[in-house]
Image (tube, rainbow, N blue to C red; front, top):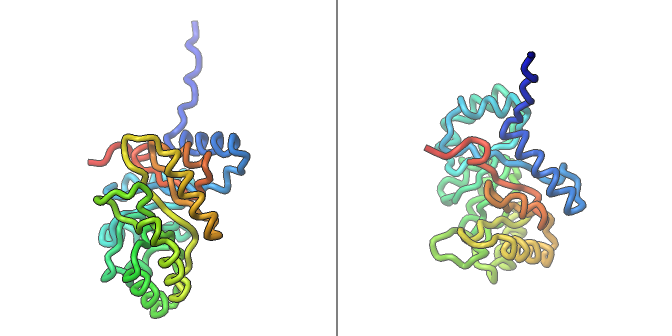
Amino acid sequence: MDQPATAFSATPLDDIRDRIAKSAAIAGRPAQDVTLIAISKTHPSEAIVPLIAQGQRVFGENRVQEAQAKWPALIEATPDVQLHLVGQLQSNKAADAVALFDCIHSLDRLSLVTALGKAMEKEGRQVPCFVQVNIGAEEQKGGCAIDEVPALLAEAHAAQVPVLGLMCVPPAEVEAAPYFALLAKIAADHGLAGLSMGMSGDFETAVLLGATHVRVGSALFGARE
């Protein structure tokens, strides 16, 4: 007796896209409103190329130097790839970040606003940014305090640094939804549409609560070495 045909096995990228689409539908939003950022930090080019071949075009890196080492060749091969910086940015790396990245998710202090403003003017390139908010008031995490958001937005506007919205990383091991909801409220209060929130373990919740950008690494690439 013939064996039944093997069922189609979706790739991790297919699975993530499907889960985003389902969460967006529940929230009454088009799936296209959510940008999936594949977090490729610590992963070699050999792990990234298959995702590019499957149509993924937005990737995220944590460190400027690591991105400089592996992305120029990948971008040359696929010019429509977008590269986002999702890790902390030192002010002395602002010029390098502006030259390489298409979006910066970690604008969190006045000195960095100044450095990015100068770098963008010199480079002749406006790179959209997210203001990172320390939404759980955790000492070990980057991001500006909630009450510092208005001043930071005002400084960014004055320095002609474009701000798309707000970004956060909620405290680990607790329910993320209240923190995502709070970030969404702060963004709405300041007329910002962009919300960079949600990672491998909680991106569906983030989409339900308005995320426009989700940052997914381990669910796509597996555990980091």
